[in-house]
Length: 99
Image (cartoon, one colour):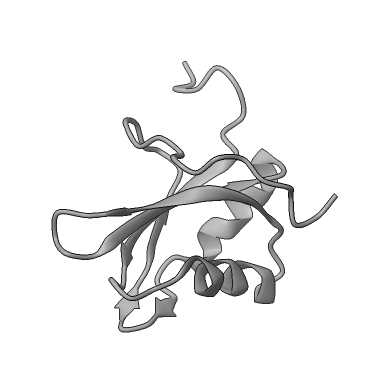
């Protein structure tokens, strides 16, 4: 039985450098051919790093974005996953980058 009742279009990005910015994260996705929406959040993590969520136009785009797992932003290799609970997208929705 699937864990989710509807398509999961959001990816959690863990192990973010504490100095990493939203712009750096989005630039990584865009330069790798992915189309994120301008919707997401940054939160401090217990280990001093940051956690972010990034939403995509489709479940397919979110799955493709997982290929960036292990890429480096700042001084940290990011960790991407879609199987998470309890982390809410905190930022208010904005206009998407792509229509």
